[in-house]
Image (tube, rainbow, N blue to C red; front, side, top):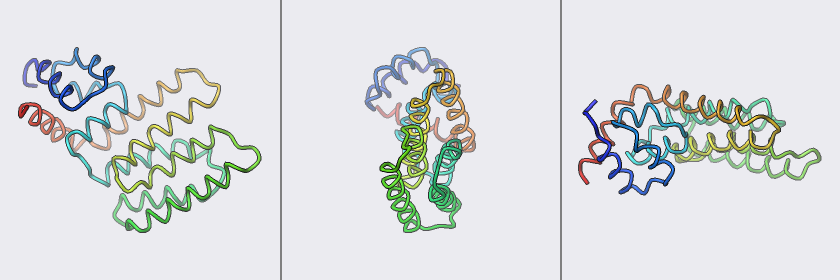
Length: 197
């Protein structure tokens, strides 16, 4: 840790256009390491990852696939399993961008068809959207889309807010696990860009 970096963090967040609630939360953070380790919101953490230019497909898409698999029990069509399988293959370097785009089109078409089918539910629709999000070409958008659609799915079922909190906590831990080997580099990039202001 490099001592108290609160002012540097505040300037960096302000210069990058961070949201008010995220900036407010970060006021208590003493270092860029703590910013990474303690961030309580998946959207804020992914925003931070984007701000430092991180775009490793394998890791971000792998995280997206992990989020989608949490909703796999809600898919009512095997097409979505195939969509996520293609995204996983792309993350591993075994599928091309064209394969990803075809899988995305198949998933979107199936979601559209199922939206008009009897028994439609917002929970199932958001779960399917989570699967389709994995196929966004930009890996950061795939990660963000899958995480947020997974959380959105939980908003549509009568559960306690505790489950959404637990899902977000799981997502934060899962993203940090996927990016563990790169966390020092992410912190270094943020600190370097902040010092350049």
